[in-house]
Length: 528
Image 1: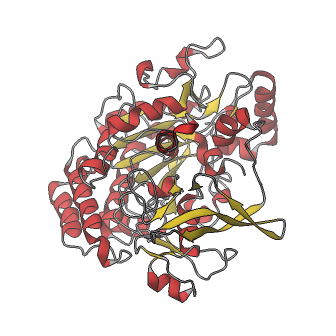
Image 2 (image 1 turned 135 degrees about the horizontal axis):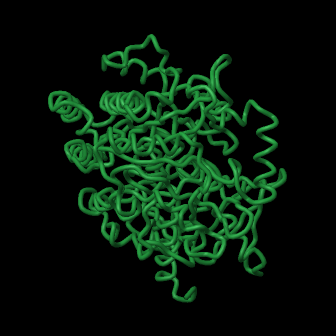
């Protein structure tokens, strides 16, 4: 679909902790990429819907918003979900109580510690609809004479040309459209925005990458860069699921009751309200150090300090990877770190059924159970690393993806701490009488023993679809997102983010793209 993954994945909007971005500059040595550098681009891309005639400001009661931190005329609408299941109103104060954290003053201000109702990229100024790259950026300018959009088209490789001084110039792109091959040539530069999987694949298909990888695919190496396709990072998640007390409602109720589903369809059609007008609601983060004993914390840190630099990384970028490890150790110790995310999902979030097919993650309560509610927990700062590399010289062959999930023990430890936290929330005084029994992990699994919890985590984990890092800044591209060693070639997508962040990646990628637009205009004054 046009707009890609910006149009799916629950439509959640969130910004990371300020220190996440500052580490790109301070720890990884990438100039021009601090929180203060990027914040103006977060606001430029956003259109916060508050104070509008048809937007009830009370919808924001559990989502503290400081309007000076938000944009009001950007391309992407952000709004609050006005609909909640009743259990949401019980869960939020329980999360406050068990975590011991107060609500953030604004979760987009660079310090989102605590729990709140999240903003979503949903346009509510008319009939509620998703606000994403195609609707926000493309649709308003689709009629421009100098714009052509080709769908059902496959980019095959970048066309490179040797210049008189021995350097390389990106001249254009070879592509396939409706069974025929074409070449599209650039007047100024080529920009790859194919994502964390396809952008490194395109570079390797063009002869830019590790010689060993290219030789296996019988592609001549024109630019040696062993970092291409490495440093793959993604958020992983698991869930604790409880059956609600008899009579309670969740999205499971709508999945299983055709009459109720019809009622909510009518609410959406007639008044733009009900379950179909929004998405999941409750969100928040807690530090890892607050969830484990000091002994357990030091044991996890020791597993990081003593571990070799990631197996997926070539020796040449050992310093880059070691600096990432050191940054994550600092975050583990930090009592204000956004290390573990917990999200309330008003449904049975079935990891066992959905790990291979995300369409099955929410498909109703198990047979014989009441409606369910889940708390998803995720590790925001993974240590595991994977890779994306071509399998052949054909662009039609999907690349080899090794996500590397849970390949570092510390990631298991962090997720296990998140599971234990979710269990304490469900067993807390505010919640206990409103749930019937635990569904997943099964009741016979004793979550009081952390090694048992770790084993559960190892067998019940899925991706959050926040992959990044495979064309990392400072290694594959420079601080202006230009591919190293090639003139006129830039990468602008999540693959350039060098290190994982404590938020969904969408808002950050919009901000990076806005900053990239300024960089491109600076390099080509005729665009201004």
